[in-house]
Every structure is written in structure tokens, then in C-alpha cells.
Figure 1 (tube, rainbow, N blue to C red):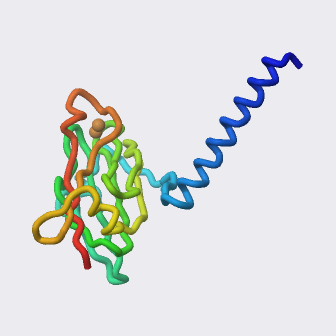
Figure 2 (figure 1 turned 180 degrees about the vertical axis):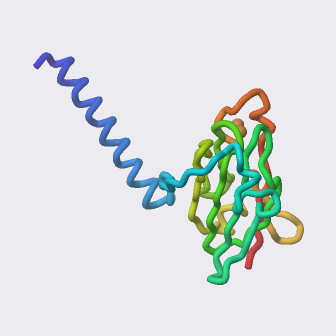
Length: 169
Ligand code: CUA
């Protein structure tokens, strides 16, 4: 084998190894996992579904103490635009797109998923008050962090955002 070829063999092999280690590290230490929910929905009829009709959106507490958040993302807004959730409690985010591909990212948390038309995106997490508190605090002791669309979805993409108010329980 030519020395240059050997060198590039080792460089590319180490890059693959570094990326493999990073995937394991971010999953174990930073709780970053690819969302894996496969559930289909008719994006053109979200408003007629029992779950994503306008009066069903927002935050709902379940009997077992967990909290469900239902969001609809549509060019160029997030519905509802502001939600209030407790820190330290199991949280299920369920999001659907009414039109094109959007992304859902909440600053200071591990909430990050694509919102693909035709599917329901689901994220299971527990928000740590300490990690969102690094982003910004309110005078009442809660923390408000921004929620962004992070997939380019059209000319109004940069104004597609919301707020998540995190309260300590
Ligand atoms: Cu929605 Cu970018």
C-alpha cells in the first residue's frame, strides 16, 4: 500500500471512530437520542382530529403525574405560542405539522425533533430546572426559554418561534 494511501486510510478510519464515540457520548452524557415515534396523521385535517383540534392544544396533566404537550406547527407559527410546563416531571411532547417540514427545538433542553407532515413527532423527556436556568430567569422564579423551528420551512422561517415557561415544582 502506498504510504499516502495508508495515511488516508487511518485518517478516515479514525474519523468514523471519533463520530461513533461522539454518538455514544452524547446519548449517555447529554441524553440526546433520535426520536423514534412512527405514527401517521393526515396533516391537512389536523383541526378535525380528536387530538390536534384547536381546543385540545397545549398542556395537559395526566393522572400518573406526567404532562403531555400538544403542538401544531404551521407556517409560520407554533400553536399555542406559549406553554407552561413543570421542571422535573416526565413530559411528553406531541407535535404535528399542518403543512411542510418543520423542526422543534427548545433551548436549554434535549427537546429536538423534526416535525414531518403526515407524522406525529413525540419526545419523552424531563426538563432540568438547572439547565434551563442557564438560559434566562423570570422575576417570579420561573424560567422562559425559546422554542424554535430549526428546519428551513420558507421565507417566514426565522419568525417561527414560541416560548416555554418552566416552573419549579
Ligand atoms: Cu418552520 Cu422553519
